[in-house]
Amino acid sequence: MKASQNVAKKQSKSPIKAEQVALSWDAPGLMAGVDEAGRGPLAGPVVAAAVILDDLNPIKGLADSKTLTASRREKLYDEIRAKALCCSVAEASVAEIDELNILQATLLAMRRAVEGLRLKPVKVLVDGNRIPTLDVLAEAVVKGDSKVQAISAASILAKVTRDRWCAELHTKFPQYGFDQHKGYGTAQHLAALNEFGACPEHRRTFAPVTAVLNRAAK
Image 1 (spheres, rainbow, N blue to C red):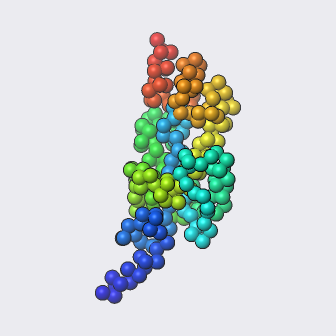
Image 2: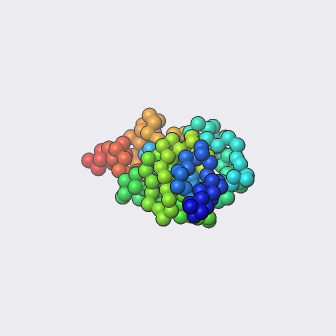
Image 3: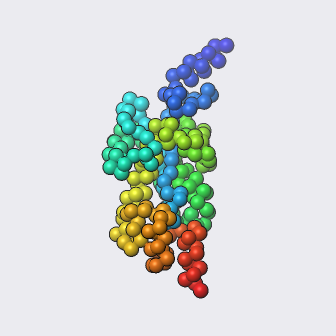
């Protein structure tokens, strides 16, 4: 009885809060949130981030990165970097996306982000319904970027990192408008793709790009 009571007491002291969908058998320790940016675009890497927040140094305004303005994301990006216990950003390249498929490349980027953390979490909460192969306990949380603050923070780091990458790519290939559509298949992007063909950062296995390459090969 004493042993079970001790376990219960330890679990009650876990820093993982109820709104972070902790399971009853969670062990106390550090929890990391993981999210990605760039699964849907026709170009560029998929970027993932992992964040362990500091409960004693809270960050106000964390939310799903898609619901925030670009300027707000930038400010929160700096604050997350300054206040989090640790964070890590990683990616899977266009070549890896074309070789593995976008789902497997996304999981690879997530695994790299977790493995890049300076501190090892006891549990990882991942946005969505799939989790990468990890050597720690992991749980998928549907719409986690709006439910779990650590996942919200990860979504912001991943989104800002990828948007900055797109802005840099725009300086190399301004004709595509990457600074505006961020690689997504907008009408502007598709028109540029049809006019100028694919650049080295376009994902060859994505249908609109494949179609352009096939036409060019005829």
